[in-house]
Image 1 (tube, one colour):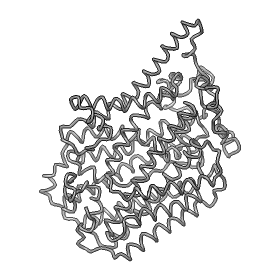
Image 2: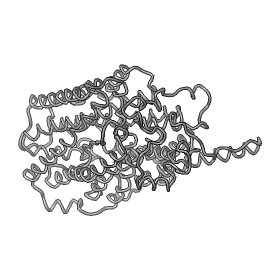
Image 3: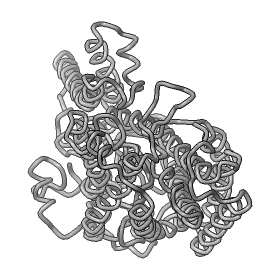
Length: 573
C-alpha cells in the first residue's frame, strides 16, 4: 500500500525537513562510530572483542505490533512473542560458557563448529551463517526504508537503505567490532525515549473505540496464541544461534558471571519494552488508525507491520521528526552489528585468518551492494523471520549435541545428515498432512501462508515440531549407523573397535583425532586457533577448560553429560 495514502491529521514533514533529519542523524551517528573505533589498531581488535566487555547488549525493533494483529494471535500471542525475545538471552547464557570451554579464544559459533567437527563442515556452517545474517541485513534496511517512507512518502525508497549502509560501512570499516559494540549502548536510551514519548502521545492523541476493542477478539485467548508460545520460543532461540553478533557479545564478556548478570538484568526490562512496543498494534487498530490485516488484495495489501507508524502519523509533526531520528539510530546500531559479525565469520572461519585487515574492509564494503539492491523489494518481515526460524530448528540442534562429552563420537558427517534430515522431516510431515500432496509438503518448508492461514490449520506448529525432532533423530541415527558399520568392520577384519573409546581433544585445534583425514584438509586450519589470548591482557586465562568458579549450573550440566568431568583429565571429554 502507498504510504502517501495513510491518514495524517496533523500534516506531514516537508521533504526538506525529512531529508535533513535522515541525513544529519545518520551522519552524526557515523561520527560517533568513528570516534568509538579510533583505538582499533589490529585485525584482532577489528573483528573481535574477546573478553573485553563486561556485559552483553542486544537490540530490537519492529514486528511486535504486527503480531497482535495476526488473526487468532491477540495479546496472548504478543505475550508469547515477548517471552520468546528474552529466551535467546538465557540460551546464550547457557551455551556460551560451554562453547567457551572448547574455544576460549573464539568469538563465533561457526568457529566452534569448525574446530569441533573439522574444516569442511566449518566452511559449510560459515556459509550458512553468512546467508542468514545477510537476510537479516536486508530486512534491517528494508524496515528502515518502510519507516522513513511511512513518515515521509516523498523520499525515494532507495535513499534510506543506501545512506544507512554507507554511513555504517564507513565507521565499521574503520573501527570494526569495537565501534559496533560501543554504538549498541545507544539502544537502551533510544528505546526508553521511544516508550516515554509513545505512551504520552498515544494516551493523548488516540481515541480508543471500546466497542471495537471487545469485538476485535484481541483480548481473549485463542488456539494460535497458545501455539505461539512454543513456535516462537523454540524457533527464535535456535534461529538466533545464527546471529553471530550475539555470539560475539557472549564471547566478549570478561567472565561467565558478567554474562549471567547481564542476562538477568536485561530479562525483565526487555520483556516489558517489547510488550509495550507491541501494544501499539492493538491501540492503532482500536483507534481506527490501522485497518485489519489484508494479505489477499494486492491493491490494498497490508500485513500490519506499519501499525506503530500509522498511529504515529496522528501525532504532531515534531514527533514525526523525533521518530526519524530514533529509528535511524536503532537501525544503524543493528545494521553495524550484522556487518561486524559477518566480517568476523568471513575472516576467521571462511578465510581462516590468512588475509590482511584491508581485505576484511573490502569485503565489508562489497557485501553492502547486494543488500541495498534487495532491500528496496517489499517483503513481509514476519515471514522472513519465520522461514529463518524453521531453518535454524533444522540445523542447530545437531550442532549442540556435539557439546556433550558423551557424544564425542559425533562427527561432521552426522551434522550434515542431521541438518538435511530436519528439512526432510518437515517435507514428510507436510506431505502426510496434505494427504499425499508432495508439492504442498515441500512448500511447507518455506511457510507460504505464514501465520495467516486457516485457524484450523495445524501445518505451522507441525513443521516447527518436526524440524528439531527430525534433526536430532537423523543425527543420532547417522551416528548409530556409523557405529554399527564400524563394529561390523572391526569384527570382519579382527581389528580393535575404538569408536566408543573416550577421545582426547586438542584444545587448541578442537578437533577429534578420529575426524582428521591426514590429508590436505587436516592441514587447512586457522593458525590463530588457541593462541589469541596468549599475548593479550588475559594471557593467564585457563586455555584448557575456561576455569571458572563452580556454580549451580555447572552441576546441572555435569548431570546431563555436558561440561567437565571431574573424574578425568580436563582435556578429555
